Length: 224
Image (cartoon, rainbow, N blue to C red; front, top):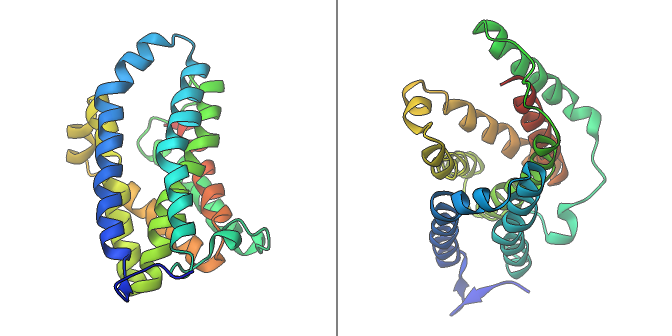
């Protein structure tokens, strides 16, 4: 059923309320709750599973799924079609190849190409869950709704900025914020967001950006 309020679409107040609660909740998680959580769970695999597999799915994925369901008549792709397996994967092979080449070329050009010695099961656990949680929020929910209401490129651009902003609490907590901003390496987040967004709009399936996101994170853990 189409979600309305007094005969008018309720998507704008829904987006505002969701955005405020979502960014506030995850900022508190990263800046306040994460340090004691990490101290309490010494096993890195278990810590990654608890934070990215349990907490992040509760804070990110579950509300996004419920909101897509609530606004099912207003989104670009309805909930039951989001995870469609009717994807022509060969059409997106060049994008997968591009991400692989980018991930390898970046450290090569900087003269710092090497396999990350810390790569292991914690990285794999994070890769599996982050692609799902982040894509469900930013492409499956936010872009899915705004692209149905706004100019497509405006929706993609706003989505890219929002995707960048959600990384700020993590970078601040890790002490990397100033270095990332001053080096302009944050631009890669904007570019990746556009790639994920366009792949979603073209495929009409959340599976494509999830797969691309997982690949990028896996490559990032291996080489960056």
